[in-house]
Every structure is written in C-alpha cells, then in structure tokens.
Length: 404
Image 1 (tube, rainbow, N blue to C red):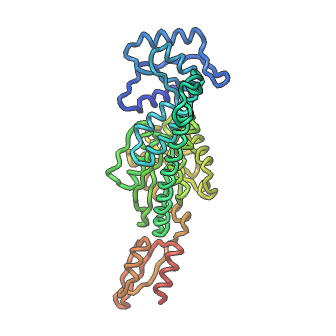
Image 2 (image 1 turned 180 degrees about the horizontal axis):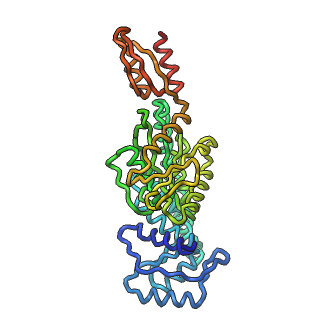
Image 3 (image 1 turned 60 degrees about the vertical axis):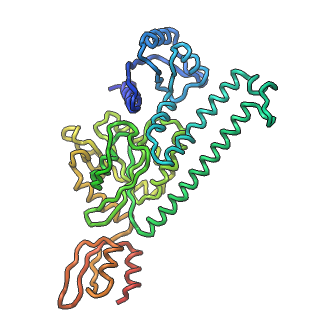
C-alpha cells in the first residue's frame, strides 16, 4: 500500500470515528500549498464541485490538510454549499465528543480557542469597519472585536487556572501514591493500537470497554493489577497518539500526558498488523521525546507488539520486544514476567526472605507494605520465614520498627 493510500485510509478512519457520521465518498485530488494557502487546480476544483453538489446527502466535506486558511475555507464553502473541515477541526470535534472528565473537557476548550480567535481575526479583516468604526464602539470604549479578544483572553486564563488546580490535585494524588510506593506503568501507543484491551487483559478489569476506533480513549484512566510476584502496580491508560496532530492540540493535552513523566515504567504498545507500524512507532517516540521525559525512563521503555495473531508466524525483530495478542491472550505470561523484571529494576525492589515472629505485628506489616510471596511457618520456633518483594525504603522502615 502506497503512503498516499495509507494516509487516505487513516482519513477515512477519522471520519468513521465520529458517532452519527457516515462516509459517503472519498477521492484524491492534486493540491499544493502556497504561502500557507491550499491551492487546487481549476480542473480539480471543478470536478470536486460537481461531485459534491451532485451528492445531495452530503452535509459536510473533510479535506485532509492540517489547517485551512479562512479565505480558502470560505471560498470552498461558498462553492460547495456545505461546511468544510480540515484535520484540526475534525480531530477537535472527535475530542469534544469523547471528552468525559472535567480535565479533558477543559483541554478541548483550551485547544478550541485558537480556532475561535482565527475566525474572529478573519471576520475583522473582512469587515474592518465593524471592528474599528465609531458606529460599533461600545459603552466601555472598546470595539466589538476588541471586546471579543478580551473575552477570549479572560476565558483562556480561567481555563488555565482550572487546569492548574487539577494538576495540583494530580500532584497531591501522585504524592500519596509515592508514599504508598505503588509502581506506576504508563501504557502509550498510537491510537487504536490496543492499549485499553491490553490493560484490561493485564488487570482483569471487567468495566473497561475497548472499542475498535481512533481516539476511543481520551481520558487518562488508572487500573490496578498484580504482577506474578504479587506486587500491585497501577496501569495508566493514556490518550492515543496520531501523526500530524496539530501542534495546538498537542500543547493543550500535554497536561494529560504529565502522568507519563510520573511513571516508573513506560509500555509502548504497537499494532504490528498495521502497514505503517514503523511510522506509528516513530510518531509515538517523537511525542515522548517532546515531553522531555527523564532519560532513564525513556531508556527502560518496554515495547509490546500487539495483534501479532493477525500476522502469521510473526516474530519481533527487536530483541527486547514481546509479541502478544491482548484480545486472544497470547504471549501474556511472557509479558507479565518481563513487566515484573522491569518494574523491580526501575523501583529498586528485591526479593528477600525474612524471619519474623508469629506473635506481634511483623507479618501483618509485611502484608501491608510489601508483596508477600511465601510464608513458611516454623512452629517449634514460634516464627515464620517470609519471602517478600520489598523496596529499599520499606525494608529500612521494617528494620527500624522491628530491630530484633
């Protein structure tokens, strides 16, 4: 499949990701960009116009370009008599529909402000008299356009303050998590690669409902699961990445991805059945580097090749990757073992066998603060040998509380 065909397939998937939208037709047309403006040849424009106007069921047109300048958008809408959406507008529309949490909705609103500002500036440029003429000076002494710009600034400040409060709450919760010493594993990947399905398979969380569509998961969610050694970890299911995602959208959602920086391990899930799996990997790694994550965190990244069952005889070329089918359950035991090794190494935990007295609080304390793997009772000594996975700080507290 050629690159242009793969790009067209992703564009069609974006449209289908919108509930209630139907893709009536798709076509390719030669175009170029000059001075930030999309330029269609006369013949291409005429053919598109005839096709769009001849399709009476059409209610909108999606042009797969990152941003359309307002004059071009108005000209096309006038010619085609339907709204025209660019990639930014369509992805923003998907985000707006998928946002569930307060933070996600605030981030969508913040991302939308540049679009609203550009419309205001474009309208002011088209009718300068309305924005600056004395007939439109309000009682406050500012023009209509000036008032609108001020309202946009005030709204932006209000949204940013609300987001900062949510970030502060996240930092507080992160501090509580750190005190409890629960390891955090962030699951990242290109949109629709199977992150949610994998987290569900690792945790057994029946409430998770994966969907086969782009941006099915927009809100960051956390789910507890146990490693083979019994250690509880928190899996963070993040928003999926997308190639050529408009920069303003990435900036607006950077707060969501802050959770990745606080994790102990990153799991990068790839859909190896996708024809552009390598390019998707490059997109994800580039986005992670843009987040300026700690170098050790990036270096310890664990790569999971999902949907391997769709590729007969698949074997990872990367020596440290694990091939799985999250949906079918293939490869999960090996993945869990690799996760355990990586988490223990990242958090400085180790397996120890401790001798504790049966009378007293030592055993219950270990059950609370460590992952107890085995308890071998020694009746004649009134003691037990307990094998645990424990962090260095917890072991230090244990010795301080129970010096004998």
